[in-house]
Length: 281
Image 1: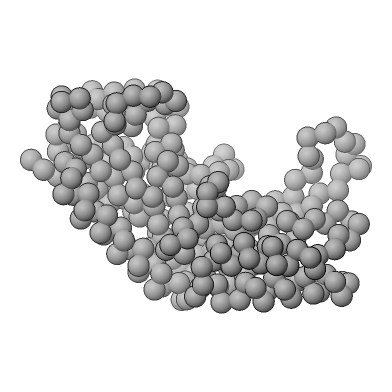
Image 2: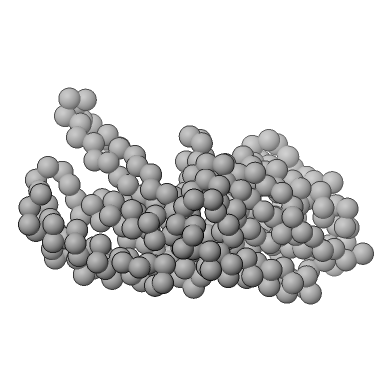
């Protein structure tokens, strides 16, 4: 390893020290910019972003071990409880849904953006990975449509979850973002893929795969979110407490079929349960 390459690695590792007590998103952006001038391509296909991602993914995993991250997980749990209590004042039925990951979870987001080869959704305030509400609703809706479920208890899924790709009335269901509240060993676990092709035609003997290391949320992590339901839409009552419970159970069931990216190869599998509920008569 060249001296320049050693200096680059030392720079990234120094910039990403003690991430648990810093804003990880800001630290990654600062390191990405600050250490670039020390990087030098070695002529063997190595590029800056994959090299940076490899070191950053390892540092995230080391910093966010479960013993270190407990205070942040406690804050996230309190935040979910606060959301539940506040939404209960406004909506007719509110549920807390707990999801325990049985495989690695990979969730993309464009904003805020992590400067990694394969990014991960990260909340800059709670300093934790999260699942955007749009990803939760999208996963539920996709499962219902694939299984040709057009209604729940006679209520059209367009009314429950909104119309896909169209402007329409406000839907009955509102999802919050999901946050980790417990883990077993590590919260962040590095994973690796080795893409062989980049779109252009290339002979098999000329393939030079570059391993890409990226962060995932580790199996065993518990994620929580709040599902809120209103009973009326356009001044017409469509739901009651019993139907609301059935919708919450369908949501939990749908999520068990996968959330996020790479679900077709086993990522994003969860065990879901409706853990807490509040409904107006």
